[in-house]
Picture (cartoon, one colour):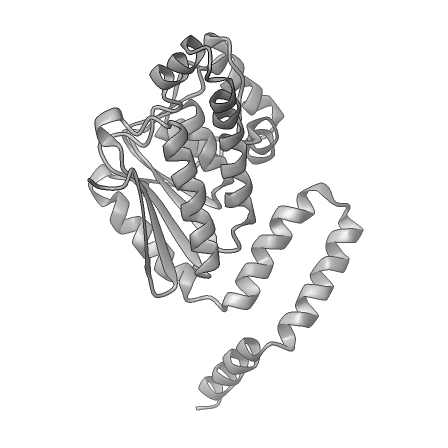
Length: 257
């Protein structure tokens, strides 16, 4: 029996795959735990880039509602229910802690929590058939994965509220227009484009790339002066790294030929 989440590593690139297509990648407790473990393993393996994809025609229909309802129906399931709720947030912590660049390839229905976990990715590619939905308020539940912070940071407060409060769904074109995804691709080329971008990212100097991601994440809540100081520190540290010296030497020697 195949794992419901697959992880593999190839040189500098890790690949994490949602693998429950028969349930349209609905996320139950086991799947969320496996996802968190996969991102933690990827970080331990020092993956410079992670390609985050899904088997089947849909990215994910979000929380496994049948599983969630079954927990409500069992008198002895309180602890499991609490763990299920916490597991969404723990996944976000693992993804945000990852020092490499995470690229998600969205396709088909990308709903609720299934969409919200992608907000902690550094880039998102969307197949033309994507339909993004955030139906939590219609169901009377609440958002997870720091979505009430990450979504407004990504597309602005007004558009975030519009998506949460009014929109039934948005297309790939609208997601691109408001800055929610970086690229739109044909369904049959999604995996190819993800690999192309991952390889391009993996060509960067690892030390400075990881520093750049860290500063972009941390400086969102800091003042301009603090951002300037942390960039100066990072620049100084990078300039003393072996990777910078080797790449600068190669660049100068190439120019002198």
